[in-house]
Length: 550
Ligand code: ADP
Image 1 (cartoon, rainbow, N blue to C red):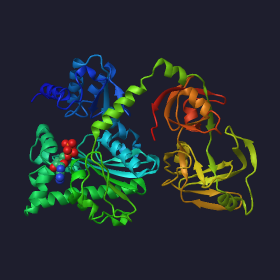
Image 2: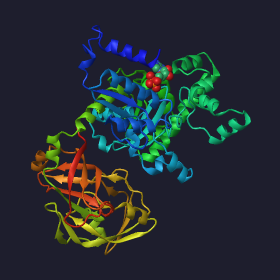
Image 3: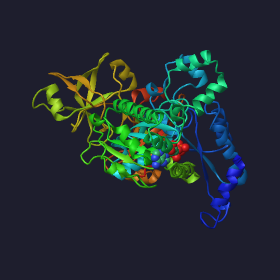
Image 4: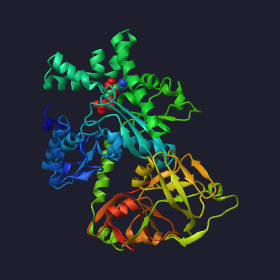
């Protein structure tokens, strides 16, 4: 069957009265396309125009087995539906939040830059879908959960999701890295490849074929369908048994690594063909992970989840919820397609967003302290001494300052902001992180789980905070009247433009609405310096990056 034949079958099926999906093709309002590789350029779904086509084309060398076919699909649908918007939803987009220490290969820097060699990750659409589904099902905000998603199909990958963001994933620059898959080996010593090319005289095409089509479960057992391998093992085929053990062991090893990367774990998710349907493989993977609070319920795990369902297979008292969630990339692609369409700015939306400038406050490093910690630093019974008011009502800068001490260095005279809080929190810039030798995550204020600690020195004492150091996430404080005028809701994420000689657009700016707030955007000194922002500066809301539906 050719690609065009496949499209004809799809269209006949969609318009077949038996399925009653649509009457005619022209009923469609938009088409969402899965595009495997978006390189480093796309962190969101986008409406496809000629520039986007060129970008996808330029990523073909990174995914030669996928992107050319994705492009052909887009071309075909454009021909069939020329007036309908086509949207590209990238497998790599969700992983664009990975920090550089997770996506960097230790290869020569110049070569990596020139050839775009870095880790990108795949299956992002489904990893994001199951993470959202899990949070909704658990009735807990996505922004407070540490999750590992195990997408186990023909292709397989794990993803470490911290507060809704992918921070690491097992596939790399291509879908070859990581887990053992149907026909791909996952992690292999690159020396073994060099050895085979030299000793067995395998050329590039032969090696490409071996790595993509003849390795993995198929390489070990001779079969690539997990159902056949499980049946083979049942009948005593030792190669099948070995394939299953190696498959489960690799995943278990990655789970351990990702618990370390996340600094804990709340939810472990199994998804895709094998993850959602094989209780035996799930049991094999979870074996011996009790240490991490991962305890399967033998009885619950005997069941599998139906499409659209979520199944909790953890033991009732287990610390980590183990959820089985069937993959639903199509639903997520449809959702992302709608989001991309909503992001198209209408004249009215642009008018609303630009209706008012947003004043910008630059927050230098500062510390919030609990009364308990304040007294430990400044003496029993002492309270904070207000020095000047801050832009937000009832908040003040104190006369008191502290010194911050990290493993590499110190930052002196850091202002305390009042009033006192429930938990102490230290907000520093990236530059100061380097100075102190502390790797702090980008977080919203108050979201301190799993953050690094620091030594704080006051007038009368020194304390060790076990956690609380963050690099503050950009945000705008907004009263409801302004939110209404801008057409924004609490926790929407926007892009904010700064005009000037070094003007730039800041993405990932969270909207926080409260009747007690005054309109004000908060950024740190590094960010302000990058845009050469001085006192009294203001920005404008350029566009909505994504809406919050929680
Ligand atoms: P793809 O990665 O191609 O989208 P799927 O997510 O559909 O693949 O997963 C396909 C894999 O799921 C195959 O290896 C298949 O054997 C496996 N699978 C499907 N059902 C079961 C089952 N009941 N038990 C074990 N493996 C299963």
